[in-house]
Length: 163
Image (cartoon, rainbow, N blue to C red; front, side):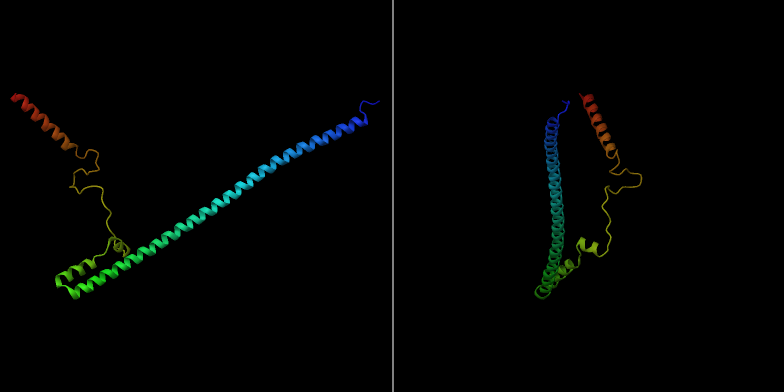
């Protein structure tokens, strides 16, 4: 007899075939689950991107509608003011009419900026004389504090001398 009989070879071959099938099935299922998980994540990402686009669109619509409403409100305000002014001219004395007309000729700050008028930016310091230190200076106001301390110590010395 030979060391390897035909039946042993067949049994070994079938056993290896079964083992290979089981290993292949296990690997196939794990990669299939990973690909399903990756596909699920891609779908979630696309859904979130779509939600983000929708949200941005809603925000843009909100601000456009708000701008229209504010514009309508400004126009209504002008109409009310014009109505009051014309009624005041008809129904009241000339002094009141003049005051209402003068109040109507002043432009709000936003309108004057829209008309191209430049406004000076606010300054972070108080006006000062040349050579004076501004309020943003590191030692601004320290001289007064030193003078106050000197006056207090002088008054304390005078009180001690009196006592």
